[in-house]
Image 1: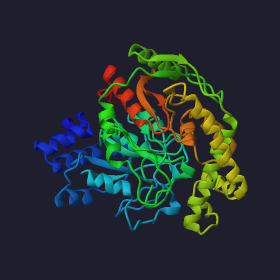
Image 2 (image 1 turned 135 degrees about the vertical axis):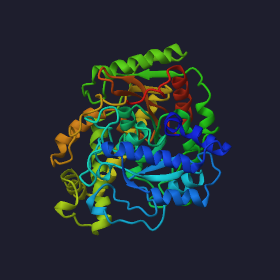
Image 3 (image 1 turned 120 degrees about the vertical axis):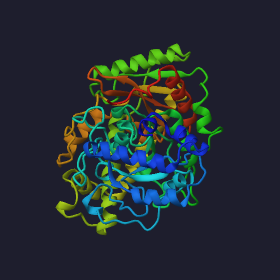
Image 4 (image 1 turned 45 degrees about the vertical axis):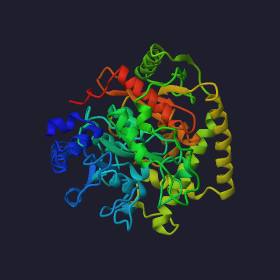
Length: 470
C-alpha cells in the first residue's frame, strides 16, 4: 500500500476509498509509516496527531471529495483542537485553542484526516523554515538545503510523499516560495478567498492568505472548491467563480496575453538558472498558442517594499501583544529578529501606519492597471535556487540587512500580497544540481480560475508529477 499511496494524488486516494478498493485505515497507516521513515531526517511534521486521526476514522468519515485523505495543517494561525497553536514561537508554546478554525472544519467535512501540524518559521516571518522552537526543516531533494518558508514543513511533507497535499499560508510568498524550492504546485488565492475566521477578519492588512501546496494542479483546485468562501461577519470577500475550480483546471484557457520578465523590480540580481527557466516557460506558453512578450508593470517599488516591511513590523508587535498584553516579550521568549521587528512595529504612530496603507493602495492600482493589458505576468518565483540551511538566519537584529537579503530572494512574490491578486508557482524548472525551480504566474484580482486553466494546460504539456526527490 505504501508504494501505491506515494504514487497517487489526493483525489485518486479518495476515489479508491470511495469505491472500497482500500480502507481509510490502510491509507492512514501508510501515511504514518512514511512519517516514521522520513520525518526524523526532514523535521516536517512537528505535532503528530495520529491517535486523534485514528479516532476520526473509527468514528466514520464524511463522504466528501477528499474522504480518507491524510492532511496536515501549518503551525501558524490555524487552530486544531487538541494541538497547541504555537506560531512556532516559545512565546505561544502553551497556547491551546478552545475552538477550531473554519478552514479545518471545512476540510474535515470534505472527509480529510488531520494527520498533524507542520513546521513554520516563527510568526511566519522568514522565507525559510528554521524556528528555534522546533529546529530547521530540511528539503527532501537535498537535506543540506532549505525547503523554503514559511510553509516549509508542509512542502517537505508533500514533496517527501508523507501526504499528497498540505495546508500553507502566504503573507509574502509563503505558499509559493516552498512550492518552488520543493518542486510543488502552490497557488496563493485572491485576498479573502478563504475566510480567516473565526479568529480574524483579515491577516496582515489583507496581505495574508491560506491554501495549500500539492503535487497535482487538480488537487489544489478541488481543495479550493471546498475551502473557499466567507463566514458571516467577514469584512469583505471576492466574487465567486463562475465554474468550480476543478472544472477550470480540466479545461484549457483561451489564448492569453502573457507578459514575462526576468528582471526584478528592485534590480536584485536573478540567478541565471531561474531566468532561463522563465524564458523556457515563456517559449512553452507560446507553443501552446498564447501571445507572449517581455513587459513588466511600472510602480514605485521602494514605496511598496518599505510599506510591506512596515505592515510586517506592526503585525509582529500585534501578534506578540495578544500574549503579553501590549508589552514587549522577554528576550528568551522570541527570536532576535522577531524582537527587533516588534520594537520597530511598536514605534509606528497610527497616522503614519494609515498613510502607509493608503500609499500601498495607490501603488496597487498602478500594478492592477498592467493587467488591463495582459492576462498574466510571468516571472521567476525566486531570485535564486533553493538556499542552503542557515543562509537566512533569524538569529539577527539588523532588520535592514535582513530585509535587503529577503527582497533579493523574493523580489516578485510579495507584490501580489500587497495587491491581493492570485498567483502561483509552477514547478517547470530544475537547476544543474537537480534542485527544483518554480515559475511564477500572477493574474487579475479574482481570477484563480484562469490560473488553474493555465496550470492544468502546462501540467498536461510538461508533466512534473513523477519528478520526485530520491
